[in-house]
Amino acid sequence: MVTAGFDPLRDEGRAYADRMREAGVRVEYVCSEGSMHGFVNTSAAIEESARVVDLIAARLRDGLVPRAVAASA
Image 1 (tube, rainbow, N blue to C red):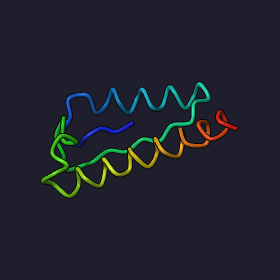
Image 2 (cartoon, rainbow, N blue to C red):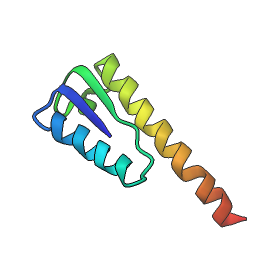
Image 3 (cartoon, helix red, strand yellow):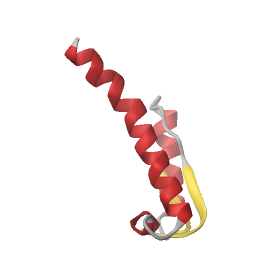
Image 4 (cartoon, one colour):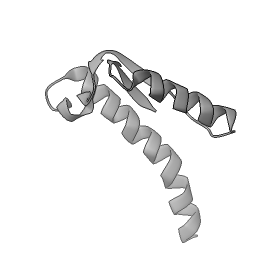
């Protein structure tokens, strides 16, 4: 779960991550403190945005690749 420090949905995003965790879902919460809502759309120009997009991609790879490999075996 990713939010931005200047995001009108920041508190709701954090609460949602907390609720998922309480329900037994593996979740990682990241708040980009100095960013605004929609900041991931600026990853070509802003280093922090690119860092978070890379983090999201890595977590997706970690979560999806083992399943895809297992399914093809």
